[in-house]
Length: 171
Image (cartoon, rainbow, N blue to C red):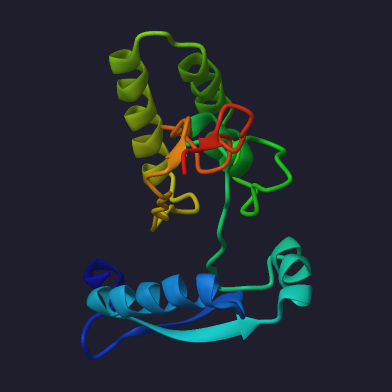
Protein backbone atom coordinates (compact mmCIF):
# COMPACT_ATOMS: atom_id res chain seq x y z
CA UNK A 1 0.00 0.00 0.00
CA UNK A 2 2.87 2.36 0.78
CA UNK A 3 4.20 1.78 -2.73
CA UNK A 4 0.84 3.03 -3.98
CA UNK A 5 1.06 6.19 -1.88
CA UNK A 6 -1.05 5.09 1.08
CA UNK A 7 0.06 5.19 4.69
CA UNK A 8 -0.79 6.38 8.16
CA UNK A 9 -1.46 9.92 6.88
CA UNK A 10 -3.15 8.91 3.62
CA UNK A 11 -5.60 6.07 4.16
CA UNK A 12 -7.79 4.52 1.48
CA UNK A 13 -11.50 4.78 2.27
CA UNK A 14 -13.82 2.01 1.09
CA UNK A 15 -17.34 0.83 1.76
CA UNK A 16 -17.72 -2.86 2.55
CA UNK A 17 -21.17 -3.97 1.44
CA UNK A 18 -22.82 -7.11 2.76
CA UNK A 19 -26.21 -8.53 3.61
CA UNK A 20 -27.82 -7.20 6.76
CA UNK A 21 -27.80 -10.47 8.70
CA UNK A 22 -25.34 -11.52 11.39
CA UNK A 23 -23.65 -14.34 9.45
CA UNK A 24 -22.64 -11.74 6.83
CA UNK A 25 -22.16 -8.67 9.03
CA UNK A 26 -19.84 -10.36 11.53
CA UNK A 27 -17.17 -11.37 8.97
CA UNK A 28 -17.53 -7.96 7.29
CA UNK A 29 -16.76 -6.22 10.60
CA UNK A 30 -13.72 -8.47 11.08
CA UNK A 31 -12.58 -7.70 7.52
CA UNK A 32 -12.90 -3.96 8.17
CA UNK A 33 -10.82 -4.35 11.32
CA UNK A 34 -8.09 -6.24 9.45
CA UNK A 35 -8.02 -3.73 6.59
CA UNK A 36 -6.97 -1.03 9.06
CA UNK A 37 -3.58 -2.76 9.27
CA UNK A 38 -2.88 -1.92 5.64
CA UNK A 39 -4.13 1.68 5.68
CA UNK A 40 -7.65 0.95 4.48
CA UNK A 41 -10.56 2.45 6.40
CA UNK A 42 -13.67 0.44 5.72
CA UNK A 43 -17.21 1.59 6.35
CA UNK A 44 -19.86 -1.10 6.74
CA UNK A 45 -22.71 -0.82 4.24
CA UNK A 46 -25.49 -3.23 5.14
CA UNK A 47 -27.93 -4.22 2.43
CA UNK A 48 -31.32 -5.80 2.98
CA UNK A 49 -31.35 -9.39 1.80
CA UNK A 50 -34.08 -8.75 -0.78
CA UNK A 51 -31.77 -6.23 -2.48
CA UNK A 52 -28.44 -8.02 -2.08
CA UNK A 53 -28.30 -10.30 -5.13
CA UNK A 54 -29.43 -7.57 -7.52
CA UNK A 55 -26.76 -5.25 -6.08
CA UNK A 56 -24.10 -7.92 -6.59
CA UNK A 57 -25.31 -8.69 -10.12
CA UNK A 58 -25.02 -4.97 -10.99
CA UNK A 59 -21.54 -4.95 -9.42
CA UNK A 60 -22.76 -2.00 -7.37
CA UNK A 61 -20.17 -2.16 -4.59
CA UNK A 62 -16.57 -1.16 -3.83
CA UNK A 63 -15.88 -4.20 -1.66
CA UNK A 64 -18.55 -6.84 -1.26
CA UNK A 65 -18.47 -9.55 1.36
CA UNK A 66 -20.51 -12.56 0.33
CA UNK A 67 -20.80 -16.07 1.69
CA UNK A 68 -20.70 -19.18 -0.40
CA UNK A 69 -22.23 -22.20 1.24
CA UNK A 70 -21.29 -25.49 -0.34
CA UNK A 71 -22.35 -28.96 0.57
CA UNK A 72 -19.00 -30.64 0.07
CA UNK A 73 -15.59 -29.59 1.35
CA UNK A 74 -13.81 -29.94 -1.96
CA UNK A 75 -12.10 -27.31 -4.09
CA UNK A 76 -14.04 -28.31 -7.22
CA UNK A 77 -17.15 -26.55 -6.01
CA UNK A 78 -15.23 -23.41 -5.07
CA UNK A 79 -13.19 -23.26 -8.26
CA UNK A 80 -16.06 -23.85 -10.66
CA UNK A 81 -18.61 -21.76 -8.83
CA UNK A 82 -16.50 -18.72 -7.97
CA UNK A 83 -13.74 -18.56 -10.60
CA UNK A 84 -14.80 -20.45 -13.74
CA UNK A 85 -15.39 -18.48 -16.92
CA UNK A 86 -19.09 -17.81 -17.33
CA UNK A 87 -20.21 -19.13 -13.93
CA UNK A 88 -23.31 -17.32 -12.67
CA UNK A 89 -21.77 -17.08 -9.18
CA UNK A 90 -18.44 -15.74 -10.45
CA UNK A 91 -19.50 -12.25 -9.44
CA UNK A 92 -16.27 -10.52 -10.44
CA UNK A 93 -16.31 -11.97 -13.96
CA UNK A 94 -12.81 -13.41 -13.56
CA UNK A 95 -11.86 -15.68 -16.46
CA UNK A 96 -8.59 -17.49 -17.09
CA UNK A 97 -8.89 -20.32 -19.62
CA UNK A 98 -5.50 -21.80 -18.71
CA UNK A 99 -6.36 -21.87 -15.03
CA UNK A 100 -9.72 -23.41 -15.79
CA UNK A 101 -7.89 -26.30 -17.47
CA UNK A 102 -6.09 -26.79 -14.14
CA UNK A 103 -9.48 -26.89 -12.38
CA UNK A 104 -10.34 -29.85 -14.60
CA UNK A 105 -6.95 -31.50 -14.11
CA UNK A 106 -7.05 -31.35 -10.30
CA UNK A 107 -10.63 -32.56 -10.34
CA UNK A 108 -9.59 -35.84 -11.94
CA UNK A 109 -6.48 -36.54 -9.85
CA UNK A 110 -6.46 -39.69 -7.74
CA UNK A 111 -3.16 -39.09 -5.93
CA UNK A 112 -4.14 -36.98 -2.91
CA UNK A 113 -0.66 -35.47 -2.44
CA UNK A 114 -0.48 -34.39 -6.09
CA UNK A 115 -4.06 -33.15 -5.87
CA UNK A 116 -3.24 -30.99 -2.83
CA UNK A 117 -0.15 -29.62 -4.59
CA UNK A 118 -2.20 -28.72 -7.69
CA UNK A 119 -4.92 -27.07 -5.57
CA UNK A 120 -2.32 -24.91 -3.79
CA UNK A 121 -0.83 -23.89 -7.14
CA UNK A 122 -4.27 -22.88 -8.39
CA UNK A 123 -4.94 -20.95 -5.18
CA UNK A 124 -1.62 -19.12 -5.54
CA UNK A 125 -2.42 -18.14 -9.13
CA UNK A 126 -5.89 -16.92 -8.11
CA UNK A 127 -4.20 -14.86 -5.41
CA UNK A 128 -1.66 -13.41 -7.86
CA UNK A 129 -4.47 -12.52 -10.26
CA UNK A 130 -6.25 -10.55 -7.51
CA UNK A 131 -9.46 -12.52 -7.74
CA UNK A 132 -12.15 -12.42 -5.11
CA UNK A 133 -10.58 -13.81 -1.98
CA UNK A 134 -11.74 -16.42 0.47
CA UNK A 135 -11.09 -14.72 3.78
CA UNK A 136 -12.81 -17.02 6.24
CA UNK A 137 -13.98 -20.59 6.57
CA UNK A 138 -16.88 -21.59 8.72
CA UNK A 139 -16.49 -24.34 11.29
CA UNK A 140 -19.39 -26.63 12.05
CA UNK A 141 -19.85 -29.37 14.56
CA UNK A 142 -22.28 -32.18 15.10
CA UNK A 143 -23.32 -33.26 18.58
CA UNK A 144 -25.50 -36.12 19.67
CA UNK A 145 -26.40 -38.03 22.80
CA UNK A 146 -24.51 -41.25 23.63
CA UNK A 147 -27.71 -43.26 23.19
CA UNK A 148 -27.87 -42.31 19.48
CA UNK A 149 -26.35 -45.29 17.65
CA UNK A 150 -25.40 -45.87 14.02
CA UNK A 151 -24.69 -42.24 13.21
CA UNK A 152 -22.11 -41.96 10.41
CA UNK A 153 -20.04 -38.78 10.77
CA UNK A 154 -19.21 -37.24 7.41
CA UNK A 155 -15.63 -36.13 6.92
CA UNK A 156 -16.07 -33.73 4.00
CA UNK A 157 -19.46 -32.12 4.46
CA UNK A 158 -21.89 -30.72 6.92
CA UNK A 159 -24.83 -31.65 4.71
CA UNK A 160 -24.48 -35.08 3.17
CA UNK A 161 -24.73 -37.31 6.25
CA UNK A 162 -28.33 -36.92 7.21
CA UNK A 163 -29.53 -40.33 6.05
CA UNK A 164 -30.94 -41.85 9.19
CA UNK A 165 -32.14 -45.28 8.11
CA UNK A 166 -29.19 -46.91 9.94
CA UNK A 167 -29.61 -44.91 13.17
CA UNK A 168 -31.42 -45.97 16.31
CA UNK A 169 -31.94 -44.87 19.89
CA UNK A 170 -30.55 -47.20 22.54
CA UNK A 171 -32.58 -46.14 25.57
